Image (cartoon, rainbow, N blue to C red):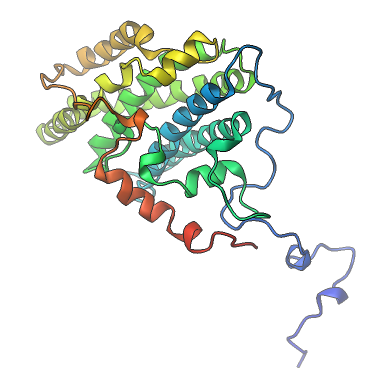
Length: 314
């Protein structure tokens, strides 16, 4: 009987060993998605006359939107109505996660003070530090992306509202004076167009399907609608970035976005809900770090392993 133990050094050198990578003492942070600088090869110089702090907070806000919604959509893995939609939703989540990584990396590069302070020599890259080591009040995402979905209709409505808004902004962000934001937006326009069209098709399908599907869709729209006005608020972060030529004031593109959404509603024969927007608290909204309880619960789960092992390496 042959000896079941294997000396990795005796493996035929002409063949790669499946274990070879484990022999390399090359400590990578255990929770990252890859270990190269996501902005490698891109001009990260802050444009002349642009306040690095403004650019950093603007990129972080956009990154937080994508990060939180990506996490919420990823919760549909293995739970979607069918296999095709399971894969489609996973791809939407991955698109947003990719955007989040680039945007958070840009934020930390523009203004290193934004990233949480970790122990010297920590293997955690700045974009992951921003994702895993901030508390809810430190995130700047809009509140639309936070709530857990009660059913599939919630996911459809939220992706539709978010992508209609985001696409209108990003179609103009491609002209940003910041090379990183312009590049992220150029790629993101294609992704968001798919997200919008995917959600719009399902919105119409549910609306014109059965009594049950229509009822669930209308209920989901009622839950999400109070958060629609916040997307268009001229927040100081957006206004400052717009004035410096690196960002877009969303209030300037609301009309065109409303036209797109109205076409979807008309096709689905669904009326706009007549409910007020979710009020700010002492003038503060998601962009100010004011969030719903749902975000804290989500972050507790999303960040738990990273925080338990802040220097975990493999």
